[in-house]
Structures are given as C-alpha cells and as structure tokens.
Length: 173
Image 1: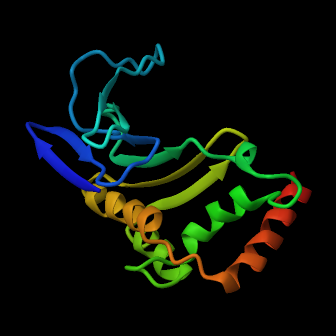
Image 2: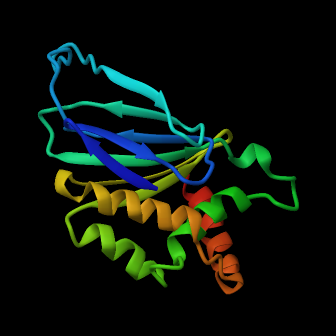
C-alpha cells in the first residue's frame, strides 16, 4: 500500500488485490459541504489502480485518521461444520505477527504507542480491519494494515489458541 499526497488530497494505491479498500481520512480538507448538526458527511468515491474501491470522508473538526480494509469474506464462506469459526480465527491471526512485525505485541504497539487503536470484526458477509491514529501518522497506519494483510505469518501453533478465543467470544455474545 502506498500513500500519495497532492494538493491536500489523499490518494491511496493498493498494490495487491483486495475486494474493498476504505480510507476514511477524518481531516484532509474542508469544502463547505459537511454538516455536524445535520449528520451529513460528503465522501469521495474512486477506484484504485488495482480495482479496489476507495472512499474518502472529510471531517475537518477531527484530528484523527481512520483507515480500514473491508474484505468481502466472512462466515458465509466457511464449510460447516468442518470450518466453523475459521473466518473469525483468521481475523485474529492477522494480529499475531507479520514479516515486518514478528509478534502480536509488536503489531499492536506500532499503532498504540502513538495514541492510536486497531481492531477488526467479522460478520457473515465481510471482515473489516481498521485502525485510528493521529492525523500525522497516516502513513504508519497504512503501512501497518498493509503488513498485517499482505505478509501475516499465520503460524500453525497459534490456530488452536485463536479458535478457543473465538469460541469464548461466541459464548459471551
């Protein structure tokens, strides 16, 4: 994932194919069409060179940036009962380390030490991976998600633990 800036507009080019790429820039310019009272948020929609949709939302009153990747894959893609919970477990596995950040502590620390947060969720239809960081950390945010989604290690020894975590989450729901 590469980030380009030009005339206060943020462009993101995703170098590998994903179903949907969403970048919600929460402050990059103000064009007078946003309304906090009326809950109206104007967004721009374009398509990246790889064909992934890109959405940019402007909220000039906020000093943070939220960046997320929405994949059109979820629990509906599992073969039941053999693969029950595997989509959710894969969501968890992405946070367990990648080629650049070797373990879960390194993955989370990269975002959290700058005052950001990262998370994900899985539904029947999709999985969303996202983080929220201070505006000046946009490139780190994009790099972090790119590493997580393109170079995750998916260590076999972590799968059983993550499947247990998924079962516990389901029981709590």
